[in-house]
Length: 357
Image (cartoon, rainbow, N blue to C red):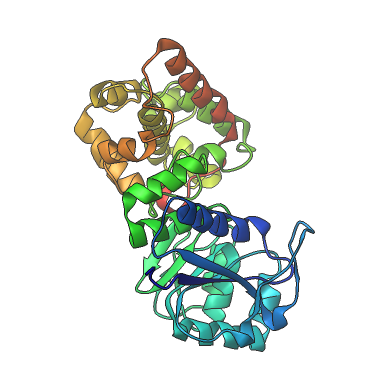
């Protein structure tokens, strides 16, 4: 006889982010299709059982009204979206979230859904994360919550919070791994064509994707130079000479426009370049370290631990376990990887939070 299913309640509302709903639900459905036992029983619920109009305008029916849910639950998950402030101000919904959390083994949020958990008091005295652009405001409004804007997701006791939007997929994969083991989680990740089951402490914003380039022309030119020449001398002195400014002036410009010293910024670029090579090639660690400007594998390991919270070997194991085989070290692929890093250099915006360490 099959065990009772794990009841997972996803709480929606008008102007919720569709991906915040779809990513966790799709992961749990895929887990069931791959043989999760006990299976997940997902219920999409809203206050009063009313249909939900997502932020992108797609209307969604619900399966339950929050007020009618009874009995033991496995997980309650509050999604984020543009409507999060309105629902956090709705005392009826907040009361239902608090009640359902009392029935549940786990309570979770995705993105700005953390606002609702904070309003309910469920994050008081805990560490939590949210979408990076909302993190500072969340901490300001709820000083009893220790907000960390860097991780993909955080677990503090029985409460889980995920960062922006698609991090809900990572959080749900973490649930599957916690409930059914890493093998099933990897199967689910492959079936959803998500090549990387990211560890929760990976920074949620890569500097290569962080936004527009610095407005300051000299700083923008230097960030492009750094990304294209990670294996060369990028000391503050060398960069200052290239820019035609003093080392002190260079440090001031980097701090003002990038939020980091030249050394810290260069270190972050090199670590992320190394991460890309670890994921896309089979180069030995000595070669990765050399190509990314680290003078030894130990220096690379320390920088990697500081940035990603795992060793290069563990990181490579996470990203290379794909459904279509292991990566190869073909010259053409490596060239494309290095070109990608060079093109990405124009997308640098800042180094903040976990990057500036």
